[in-house]
View: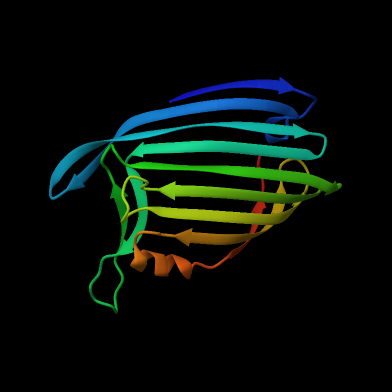
Length: 191
């Protein structure tokens, strides 16, 4: 695993609250072992990306691009043929020619003392090398946060989700029924 960054500090703050402009890139590679038909197989898993963060005064901007090669998780599937029972299994596509990529853009602004509005857009394209397995996911998230003292916070988010499988009509009909998501999260840092 490798990580490189350059950061220009503007003011005070620590961790996530550091006022700065930061450019970074990262790379991760390794082998994963899977068992299939009683045999063990090693597969490549490569991930890399680059990004930028900017935080000054009340404005935060972030963007990151990521790419994956080799082993790609393709979701979970009910593999039980009995419709009255469920047996869920994680699905992996392991060959090295598999490719996925995605990015996100995030902006937040502190409206009033302790209140922050957030907007985030992300896209993820999975299994770009296989028409039947190819999926596209897009999410637009809007939210409001209340920041207590330090890093403790309460977040309320609404995410508009969209997914499609342009070359697989069965998967596409399932993805079209994907709904939006409302999330409420409380984060507390214990020292």
